Image (tube, rainbow, N blue to C red; front, side, top):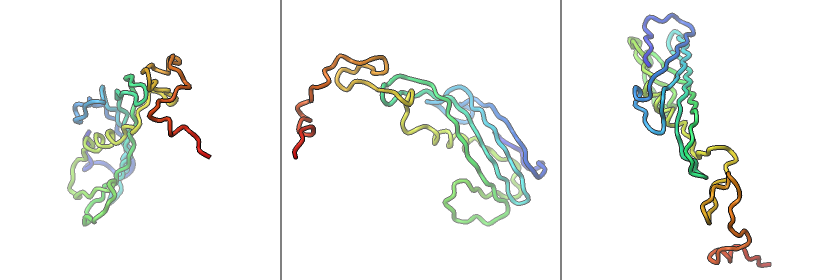
Length: 163
């Protein structure tokens, strides 16, 4: 995903890309193609980009362990500053480039922000009930036959009330 910026006029430009995940060095859990929309606003001494990507991924539910597919959305903004002395900044969304820069390559940023968009808690659905801790039955498909009143003797002291 490269955009030639040397001949772009000032103002806003929109670019759409569709790449195989292998082309930007993405692997599991991602599959298929990466669809990326880049809105680029070229100003006199800076370029502001708004990047939106959609990528399919396969995950295993953290509660019930079934595999499921999810469309991952990755959005970020990047500011490219030209002909300025690079300053020490912790802002990952600011990049310094030379005025003679001919092209901008978005592959690395799209890959990194896609990886950052993987959810910490992967659930097949928001109200997933998970597995029974005793028998392992999937509680999304019905109740298990385990007795509910019985407390594991190792944890019994936690459930006794002392007043």
